[in-house]
Length: 301
Ligand SMILES: Nc1ncnc2c1ncn2[C@@H]1O[C@H](COP(=O)(O)OP(=O)(O)OP(=O)(O)O)[C@@H](O)[C@H]1O
Ligand SMILES: [Mg+2]
Image (cartoon, rainbow, N blue to C red; front, top):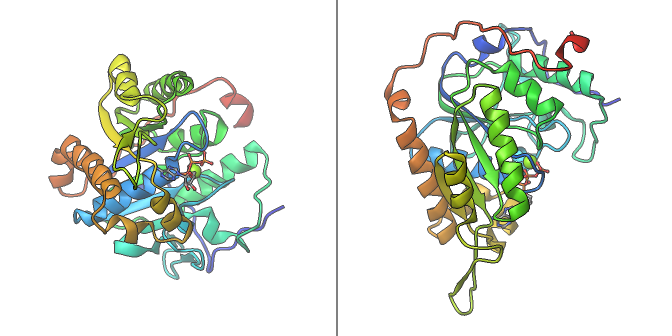
């Protein structure tokens, strides 16, 4: 079994409490793995920080945490505050606060081999022990799918979430998966902030021609059919991918290029969507709401 280590003595707390100083709480969802959900989460966080907002990312992918790597934070360790016993997020580039199970694993190659009930418990404990400071936006990168782990996190934060960002790629197979993600979001009473179409196109560096490899406007059509906003598309960009692998996503996006423009356009739509909340003073702690019961919940508790 994997041992997670957090430096210092941690103390339990409630989830509603841990996010009480956060103005806008978002989750990124994708019913399908590998479509670029973590990349979109991290890019939006960087884009928001570039626009001057104070941002946090909760990397909720226990089995495949990737957010720290994208931001070059692989050597970081999470500490528990001496007085409160709360876990302090790691501060990354542009002041982005990051919490990930990756910071608590002994090495980069350690696999988390946990069965679902243990993951659920670990996630609940872990999330509620974090002390998020005042943030404009917290983005939670949910694990892929609509199964146990994403459900646990979404349910745990239920009542406090302001929206979901659905990530897809422009293929017909994705259409059905997006609809599932939208259904997941709605059934958990999380408002859909919009759909992001990752890998929408590819701009040939030689000819300058843009190719819509999987089809043009697919993400927009999916969003329209589902009656949810379309936030925008992000091109396939090999240079972006190289920077990601090198832990320099933030550096790449701070340079002016087509990809950073497309991400900032998405960020600006989100800012517009949540303008009222973002201009408010931090909300008072949310009242605890009873969690929606779903099939299988009873067995676990
Ligand atoms: N627009 C893009 N341009 C270039 N590379 C991309 C793009 N989107 C995704 N990738 C590549 O695809 C890989 C997978 O992306 P990412 O880790 O964000 O997917 P994910 O949906 O979070 O995966 P998982 O379901 O495993 O959590 C990345 O390592 C990145 O290199
Ligand atoms: Mg991921």
